Image (tube, rainbow over all chains, first blue to last red):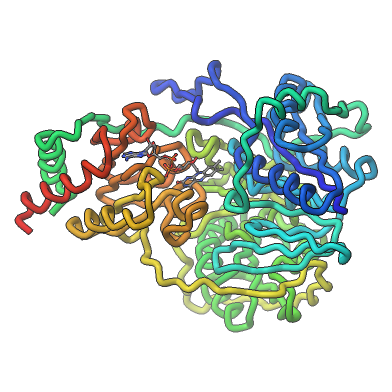
Amino acid sequence: MPRIIACFKWVMDEADIKADPKSRQLVLDRVGYKISDYDRNAIEEAVQLQEKHGGSVVGITVATPGAKPCLKDALSRGPEKACFVNDPAFENLDPSQTAAILAAAIDGKIEYDLIICGEGSSDLYAQQVGPALAEKLGIPCATYVNKLTYVEGENKVIAQRKLDDGLETVSVKLPALITVLPDLNTPRIPSLKQVLGAAKKPVDNVSLANLQQTFEPCLKTTGILAATMERRRLKFTADPEDIRKVVDSLIKEGVIA
Amino acid sequence: MAGVWILAESREPTLELLSAGIDIAAQLGVKVAAFALSSQLAEEYIKCGCDEVMLLPPLAAGQPLESYVPVIVEEALLNGPDIILIGASQRGREIAARAAAALNTGLCSGCTGLRLDQEKKQLVMERMLFGGAAVQTVVCETRPQMATIPPRTFEQAQPAEGHQGEVRQLPAAPPSPVTVVERTPKTSEAVDITEAKTVVCVGRGVGKQEDIALARELAGVLGGEVGCSRPVAEDLRWLPEELYLGISGKKVKPDLYIGVGVAGQIQHVSGIRDSKVIVGINRDENAPIFEAADYGIVGDLYDIVPKLVKEIKAALKI
Ligand SMILES: Cc1cc2nc3c(=O)[nH]c(=O)nc-3n(C[C@H](O)[C@H](O)[C@H](O)COP(=O)(O)OP(=O)(O)OC[C@H]3O[C@@H](n4cnc5c(N)ncnc54)[C@H](O)[C@@H]3O)c2cc1C
């Protein structure tokens, strides 16, 4: 019965991010937060494996204390327990720090057979934390997986990877780490009962002091500028006259001929 | 050998990274080394300006390419490169992430531009953030400085008259705990969407697979090709993966892009940003595609697309 850890990140919803067109600074004061899109697939896969084979699912995240609402959100999706590795210092971490902190929080502290991460986070999309965490823990990994099977009694998983040059099916001895693509499953939408139930599930709080290590960044961000795009933003209706206007304009612009 | 190291899965991306590497190495006054999977490629890389090639021995049956990670890490520990540039294929991304973790160094993923800060002898690297809504500039404070770079970011290095270099054989990869049990190579019957002058893009607003015919007809009268959003290729599997546009898919620069039932979320828009003219068709007047479009048509695509086809035919007299 697999003991599974699902990793997830609490991120700003990029759809809420606005930019000041003059300074190209991001305007972040009205942004909402969410569980990173593909981490929902990671949690879902862990929960589906548990429903099929038994075992356990722990959700783990590294965040600042302010990310507390992520726990209820994650737990309502099925894990029985969460590990909240949080500290005010855990802000704007680079992927190497996140991987190192996760490794320190997991290694020797949580028993596991399988760790599942999303392909990449919706904010940084560096696609590093999964494989880097595997390396830190000294376990094998398979990335970009779109089909996952746990082989009972053999202590291994069969994973289909979707790569630029085709599909590759690999057999991986456990313990191992898998990063998943969004086409692997459809994350469930938690019911009201599940949302209410989530509040009662246990949470392990782990602080920087508990980890007895320091985590220095390797990358330093020297600037963030909004990617701006000059567009005319003209709007038309479905009336034949309007459609004709659009076609005329496109011909004038020389993009239809 | 220290200096700038290049690693990519195949010939073209290696030559692309080589041209960037040669440039940076010249500014730093160091040498360029590349990994190669065959002695034939090794020779070509040397001709194209590489000072040393590290030849990777063939893998055993069932070993995935990622099995080279320990070999690469070992070489880096022995020789202390300043910079390692890696081709951002999926395997390249995994190899880079694991190598960076093993070397305790920083990695700029999906680096879309880089230059050298001469004074600090440091790479200044750019990458996208928030699905492409912003550009992040980073420097790496540890060594080696690492980056994964998408294909076609740089021109390929060209053969330089009489360039000499050395080939060094690396040890074999240790047995891998991951075994390949099956491989299905991609049958690449899909068109190269990045070459199209006009792209008609199918979004999830197109309700049924058969209805892609509507988009095909529109593309037909415009002499263009049909592309799609990520969920149309990945979740619905209606069109091949090579046709989806966006930050994780293809980046296109057509003269004309027409989004048909495409919402226009930032991850998609990042891939079409350089289009000359963008047209969006969506029934939701608040859909983000209208922020990114020159011409937005609000309404039902099933009503609008046939009308567009008719008007274009009339205007072009076809
Ligand atoms: C890390 C990450 C990377 C991603 N990378 C990419 C990427 O590279 N490329 C990409 O495309 N996406 C990417 N996505 C997904 C992206 O965020 C969007 O979810 C996706 O682009 C939406 O696809 P869509 O517009 O086809 O579908 P939807 O969001 O479902 O939108 C469908 C639209 O069609 C409209 N519509 C419905 N019916 C009709 C009708 N009859 N007539 C007119 N309009 C209609 C609706 O109003 C809606 O706006 C990524 C996401 C993440 C988190």
